[in-house]
Image (cartoon, rainbow, N blue to C red; front, side):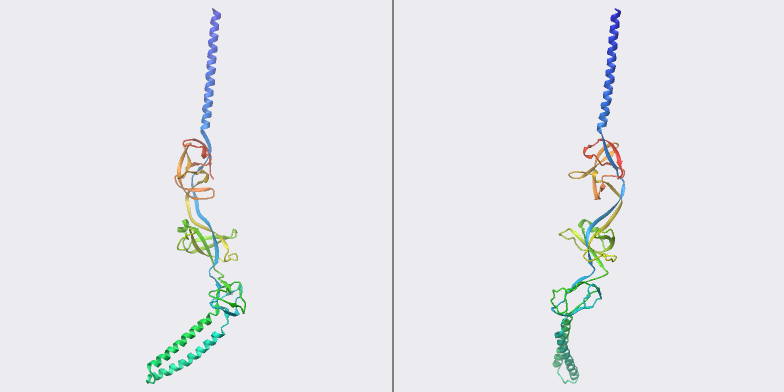
Length: 354
């Protein structure tokens, strides 16, 4: 009987030990699963704290340097060159005689007309005295006056023709390379040389239509030559009155503020336009943007959860973009792993400042 009792007691003890062992294993397994599940729902991502930054609105466009005044020297009439004063690469004053054509025939005609004018003037003066004493009719006197004025007009025409055989400098400038010699027969289409101002250079460039309201007379611009780091300054003097229909650009002209041997007419220039500044711009990394069919969004971390927020963007830089609507200073946005996140996902993130 005693052996029976001992057997049942031992059996009960074994059952209890087995029960408690099972309960402990189950609890441990449950805790491990819960921990793994919790870790599985958390996403490790990088984040960026939005804060106000300085945003400079600058654009770079191509331009060309031009002489402030430049002209291809040509003559109005055909003829033979008898004199040349085209000092290549030298400065000449306005009005300097540069080229003279043969005009002996014109000079002879002019002398003939001047002689006729002198005789006609004497006749007119005598008839004026005769008219006072009724020694001549009023009609004869008027006819003589008409002939006198006609000769004067013919002389002016002849002088004009003689002036057309002369090429004078229309402004102060530097002569380029001449292309004629004494004795050459030229026509109105023959280029004699070029003349360009020496101390003034213009800068012509075009800007896209959307920036045209920002361009005003007096605006300062900077430009460089041939990828050189040296910068030159210029001041906008005028713009075209309308946008070019073919290119949708606005043509702008500026006057260069300095002179340098590097500034050569016709040279290419890279123009930098400083349009505006914003000290409170909200800039975020471009990789944080989620493009959608009709708008754009970013993921904002709030209380450790992911929230999708629709935004409006503005200017774009190399690695950042301006947000004009949807975010505030101090918001934390997700910059990595955004394709694997859903609304309300738990986040485990480290903050990136750049």
